[in-house]
Image 1 (cartoon, rainbow, N blue to C red):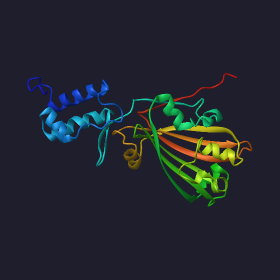
Image 2: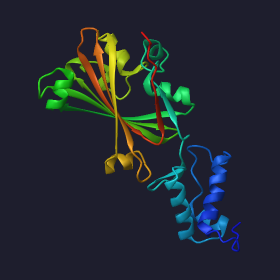
Image 3: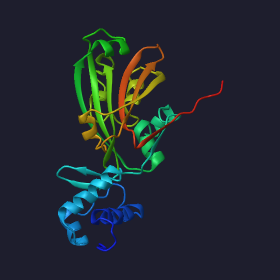
Image 4: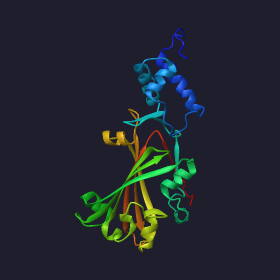
Length: 253
């Protein structure tokens, strides 16, 4: 399949053919590309040529490499995050709150890995949550995936006095998620405040999100307040800047 007389380097010809197969859906989002050995046999080129072709596709944000697993096609280029409805009680009642709402709106299969631990509140989070410095916090760390590929990291911190004896301290919080459990525990939610910033990722974040070099991340901090005005959760989200689009709707009054 390689035209040696074309003047186009072999690795670019391989990348062009693989890109075409991704564009036409022969390799769909989340699919694993053939192994390096299979690609060598298919195109009749060397391993370095295949590696250069895959590196080019990675730089274009079309594929991502997982150490020991292979190379996978990334999900659609933009995930629209619709803020107008994703945190409503109606969405939680349908088990479509937050990330599940993003999945429904963008037609991808969601999956989440969760780790839970406890820590003592730093000065920053003590001030955010209105607790004493050193008070015990419940921390929920999540990796959100679209069609198996990571697109968001989220770390929620809640006062332990709020989460004790609830499934918020468990991996599976049940239908409606943590916010539904908060309201069941008597903390009726009133409103949310979000701040959005951009920055370059740390090496750990870049690795976990499988970002291409030079890709920034969106940093969204959401604080949830109950009807007494108390902050009951601070959630720090880091989103792939080349994958997410934030959409907000505001009333005109």
